[in-house]
Length: 389
Image: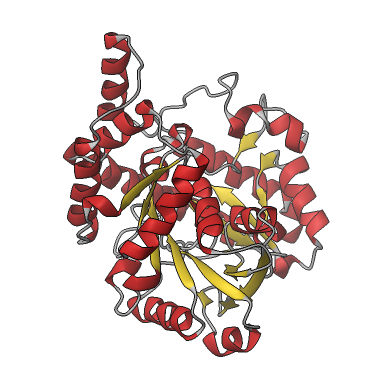
């Protein structure tokens, strides 16, 4: 596994690289793509071998007997997270944005409100609004560069129309690994307001050294209203498989979700199932361990370089590969600091306001790319903000 290898992604239908010019006006010839949350690394060899076996066989029919696939998911959750999953609790969706949409569809009605803790992954609000539901923002507290929750404020913000709360754990874009006490607080909040709790844990494998993720399924008193969402796609850089695990402990909620899945004709593709089964393996686990060590090196390089620029502050990253940088200390408005990053440094990034309240002074940078490219991005940022130094 050579994470330093520069792999040419331009001209491969890569959203991250081939859509730079259309969306940002930045040519992929000299720009650096640090926006879309996929990695510039090849997945573990076991995933490629599984696909090669399919192409060697040469017949691409309907997938049957997913016993091995479900067993791989159960093995991974038990081995990596200490979480025992029932085979019948697992639903397979076309990724977790689709999983989120299915949850909104299955467990809420038009006009209902869905709670999110902002700033947070922008697809949540997009899906909620597209479904004709109301977004109820509960802003996180930025306490000296670390996000925390304020449940007194959140209780006061509830109107009674809320039916669901979506948690991002670990947090995207802030990179927080929520502690057990914080998760218990979310569970109690959901119970107080009679909310279905959807816990999106897609980044749960991407932890910095010394961090430990606690699955929401381990929290007491929440199983009857809990929906867990995980995936191989983010962990192993196979987002194009569009595959997600929606895991529902409660049989009543399972039945409601299954009804909507059946009504919408949702079923997985065979390529994604083969990739996921191969990835959730000892070989895949070794690859993830090496990946996280490499990402930690990228994090250290990026943070040291960015934090050396007066007025910039990269939020300490506990999980994910997404650096969340606060530009408020520069005194610049968002248009100016964004212009410098995109037009002067030629780096494509995600804009903070798309993540909701609290993101106004931030930009999100994807550091899951070869280290030489991270170093180049840091050098460009230091040049773009040279007048502050």
